[in-house]
Image 1 (cartoon, one colour):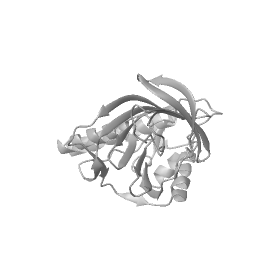
Image 2: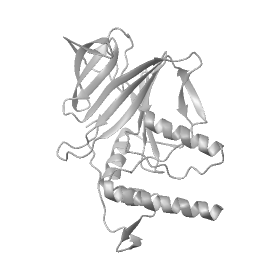
Image 3: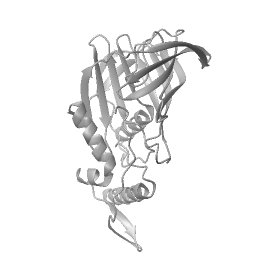
Image 4: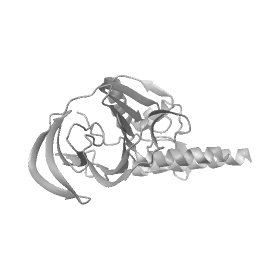
Length: 284
């Protein structure tokens, strides 16, 4: 039975690699288990955003579409991929039931977690690299964003919103926030407005977040940091690793000990070509 399971996993991995070569879109982080964690704060609100990333303005290929959720507590706001969380949750349940987690095929996501801690004056960022690659992490002081608020008005999810603009880490952004929810947070590292950010995007139309749902959390719910194996690095090393990973994802994965087999002329053999994945850093 174990040998059949191994063969199934091997065939599934081969299929996944073929999809990678054809679509250039299945290099995704491996699932992580979420049963071990540290509680950082109580959770007061959860805000869901549709995320769209067009990594290259020159190559109008398929964008990355993700869902991020912003968990807001009394002192900490955590923003992360909800699609990755769903995959992690499913994998944890499967493991607990004695099932083989194997490889879960999923679309590309934006595998970033941010923790904005206003009490400590720090921001922590976590990035999950392809497959079973390292989970990178660094901390930095919170950057004060110089928002320019204008009188322009709009409505999002029936909330009255006001326009604000800023320059942040090499990009120009336009945001819409609502004073009806006086929480000074938004997705990713964006914060500091007198109301919750419901929509924000850069002026190059490469990164955007649009709020789709807001929930009030139950009293027992908490904001968690999972006890995974992190590689603590500085921002420069993380940025360099992510660039290298996208420039040659096959070589990056092979450096982790993975083997790629491709089908050519009716039989499987070593991979015959390298590919790259378009990548335009959020912070330039």
